[in-house]
Length: 236
Image 1 (cartoon, helix red, strand yellow):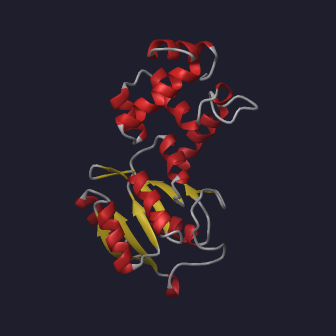
Image 2 (spheres, one colour):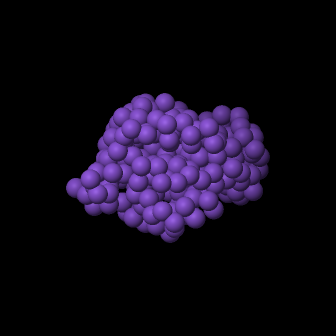
């Protein structure tokens, strides 16, 4: 797993610290599929991980955290009608010392960026082995931030698309980072519903960003916005 010491807004344990007495790691699983939760329990049964609770949504997760005080949360990007990314923000705001690690099938690097901004200390794919999961939990317990190595190439390529002197594509035209992300999906031909799905935000939020993009690019429709993005080389 790729280590990124100190990255992300979460306030996990200090460097050099470890979870639990005797190295035990007390973990809450938050996933809306019961079979996934059961599978994780089985995978981690003979490891130093102790599963102290399960939840399918944010409300259940908060209740389990209050009851069991886990060391870490394994969280999916999507829950029952909810965004796991938003759940992460709420959990880390309410429990800033709690390490949240995403365990998901979603490989889009945008989810990684959003997860770290939400306060996560790790992002792993569900094909990770039990040994990988334990190792990542140990690392975040020592204050590291870990990203699955299968995603680091995508992240590097995305970073290479940002032109020198620019913070993110379109920043020189006044676009916020989120507006840049929305514009990128517009260039890819996604409609509002698909953009909302891709970025795990509501359609109303997408519409707000699209209106802001139109205003900043001086256009009145999506076709012209895409044309400006391509003409100005915002995305290469």
